[in-house]
Length: 103
Image 1 (cartoon, helix red, strand yellow):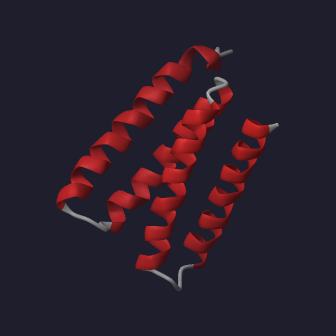
Image 2 (cartoon, rainbow, N blue to C red; image 1 turned 90 degrees about the vertical axis):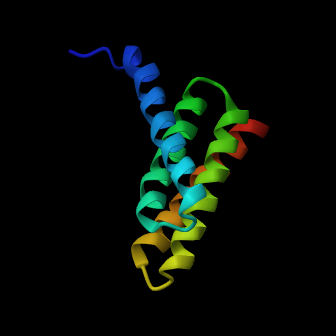
């Protein structure tokens, strides 16, 4: 059986690397939907990992970034039910993190 806790730092590194690469490329290609599709799960993943490690400030920051990225995706394709759904889910995650932070 795998010890998943020992893999959390690797997952965080992978998410950070993906987020950093996307952010850098988005500077040259603002609004690139393909990059945004990669960026938001990395941001959300970093938020969840941060929350799991008890770092609610980082969790809030990452989830807010994920919401902003999802807003860009829904703006790029306002007819996409999938993006609308993902945006709602990310807002729910952010609200849960904010409740955890205050509570």
